[in-house]
Image 1 (cartoon, rainbow, N blue to C red):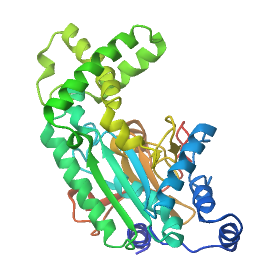
Image 2 (image 1 turned 60 degrees about the vertical axis):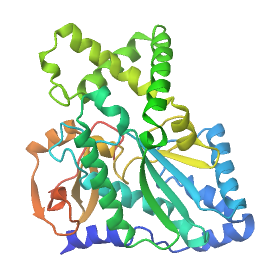
Image 3 (image 1 turned 90 degrees about the vertical axis):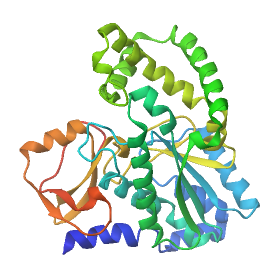
Image 4 (image 1 turned 135 degrees about the vertical axis):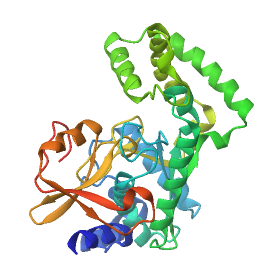
Length: 343
């Protein structure tokens, strides 16, 4: 079956890479460090440009690991939850599958030429999600466990020099230490937001409202409108206060770390979530798009999923990954065209 073979290839062969003649010439003429940097700047993956300061940091990170004969360290900071509006909530689905496969392919040339290989860490911010979005801890725990299990399925097919894991920022702290630094950061962010532009404030509040599960860890539907607005307003504050945590910053953005993300953030490489998508995997669902007799991995937002209602599609039963959201996959039988940067 062609679809099953496509998915098996994504799972079993995503860390394989065959060096080209140009690769060998680059290694011979400029060395391994230069080759690794050029691969990370590969426009086949990179969706946006990388500024000069970020390029300097990436080169430094490669060099620091290289000179100590250690794996190249990659970090991917993200929410650590599944958007509650999705049918697959609270566990991973094909979006995470396609993303892990895509990122494995992205770093695969390094595995071929650099014996220490790669350490790739998904850095989960789930410790802040309950108070920020009212998502129950048992649901973020379920997501974390399912993500670990999905990584394990991929790891069966990785070479010895490829390591991937998911780590929680909350585990870097004692509870008291975390609460004290977070409270301090919240006050700093509140003061900063006084001077924030109105347009950006509106955008942040809209995103906060969409992410909140009002009937979640607590029943916020019983709150007054003013109290609900206060919860919405605290979302961006908690987010920025958490992102400013010192141990989080050091862990994610240390001198020896190459930071990856879906879309542009400071000092990182933005490579989307699949060859054809930039939607964040934790806020999207994975499907296959049939195009010219082949299949494209797509990760769709809730709005894009809704747009599929009018299109011809089918749900195919699959037995590949032993997790609850992987017993079938949706195939759309025509080229998708959304008004974003997805191809």
